[in-house]
Image (cartoon, rainbow, N blue to C red):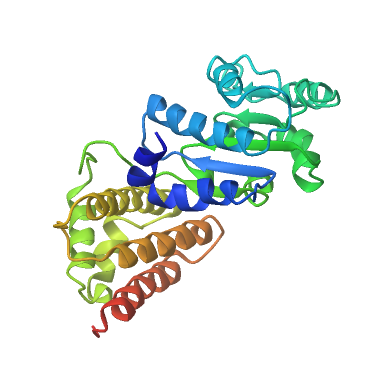
Length: 286
């Protein structure tokens, strides 16, 4: 599984698995799963959990027995929290705190996993905040969500974010003709400011529409990245570095558009940032 993980998720492998093997484990992670299906995410998550436990385990169990208990969800120091009636409740985290007051059964680390972390409201988040602000040695939290920007900021800002690339069928996303044209303009390294009004009217007219367009654009770029990693003959005229830098630009744009910004000024800055990435990476000017 690790060799497959390294091939399919090279960024995750570099940012998550390698540090753990070098005995560098953080107290809180946020796993952003994107459009990957639940079974695939669970396989990656279990690999990640096993790496954390086996590289930090000091008890008497063999690694084989430890991994067996983890796979069967029978390891007492691993607690998984799911929404109840589509809500993550404060009481669930108060109960978690009580359970972690007791010493580890197997003299191991203790771990909690919060699924659908975007369903944390401020009350529930506040109840878990002490674990994040004053981390106790030997307690590790993993928050799982499809989109990090839907998670309350008090949680997001205190986690190491780990992003999974989309490994669904290539170019499986259904996108609007306008978004495809915008992507083609990026790939063609055009002067994006010349089509400012068209982009604004069709894709970025308000915060809600901008967020949707940014997420779709990022998903497309992640699919493109997966192709350039796995195949020797990339289907688009962008390097891996260019795509990664464009994804970073989108991440920053998503953060900024959440606030009460002038959407036209925001879009102008966003388009210029894209052009700068392509210009610096290729050595060409627009």
